Length: 161
Image 1: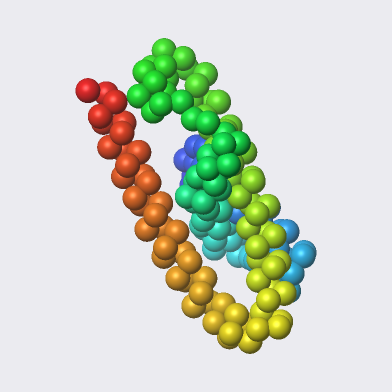
Image 2: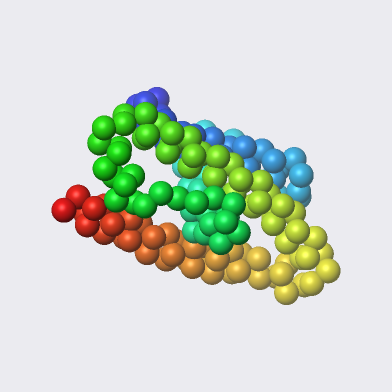
């Protein structure tokens, strides 16, 4: 287990593992759901996946929404690639920026889960189908994440030409 943790980058810790653990703690304390694991090995993978999912919600939903509101504005990607070759601090700043987006997503997700738990009490459809609805949401989320990552790779290749 220690070897596995040693191989995690700071990006993976602060954008996936940390939000997954915080989310699990908050949900366990604030709802009737229990997202805490007694088995540390299984828990580490579960928290990582939960954090990864929260990060993807931030990337695929929160970020475009904040761009649409014009709350944030990004530089052109080709400029980012060009500047990152000379400005070594840009990677660190971008990593911190992604962490803040993930934390925003963490709190939005907690509020949504609190709301869906209240809906489930009044609408049996949500209660009876919450697992199925969660799987559909995760499938759609990761399909869009795959598309975004593919576009990111394509932009990076095109910017390096």
